[in-house]
Amino acid sequence: MEIKWTDRAMAKISAKVQENPNKQIKLKYDTDGCGCVVSGVTALWLTDEKDSDDIQIETNQYPVLVEKSKTVFLDEKMTIDFNETANTYMLTCPSQILNPRMSLTVK
Image (cartoon, rainbow, N blue to C red; front, top):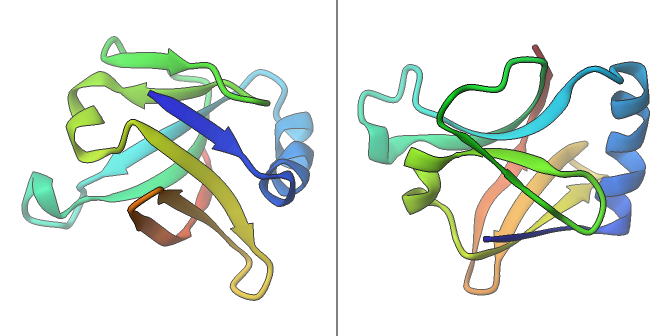
């Protein structure tokens, strides 16, 4: 799996990473309240909890934790961008937009 940060996304998340130096970035496939695991949405978490199912993906900037059991819902090549207008992150892959309005939550 390959994850790339755009310059806009790196610039935006850098301040949060510096404010929370002991936390790791996690690309969370969140299914809470969705009713079904295939209806989940991706979100960015800054967390100090690394679950036993998490794998670390090296990127062009910050490493990202991903739940190994949820990789089936993700693409092999993804990009994390930042949308200034919506003030949210965006997760894309070459063939589609996986989440156009991805939030960042500090856990």
